[in-house]
Image (cartoon, rainbow, N blue to C red; front, side, top):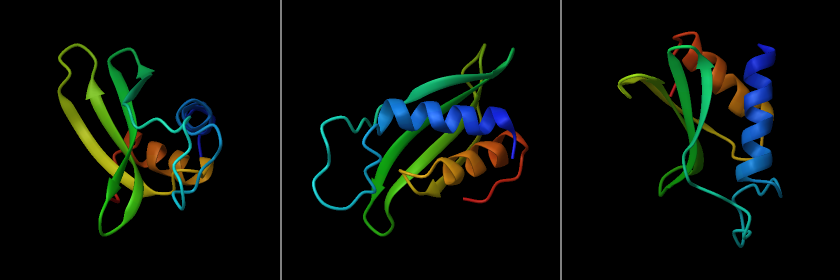
Length: 101
C-alpha cells in the first residue's frame, strides 16, 4: 500500500471522523459527510465522503476526477468509516484503476 494512500486516509478520518465512530449508535457531532477533495497529481484529484445506504450501512465513497474539467474518471466505495487501512485500500485501488466496489 502506498504511503500517499495511507496519508490521505489518515487525514480524511482525522478531519471527517475524528472520534473514529464506527457507524453504530448516536452519530457524533464531529462526524462530517461533506465531500473533501485531495490532490493526487497535477491533473487529478480525489473526492472522499461518507454515505449511508439502507442495505449496507455507512460506507466511504471515493471519486477520482480530472482537476481541470471536474469530469468523473472513476468511483469506488468501501466498507469502514473508521478504518485507515480500509479507506487506504480503496484510495489505492481507485488511483491504480482496480475498481472493486
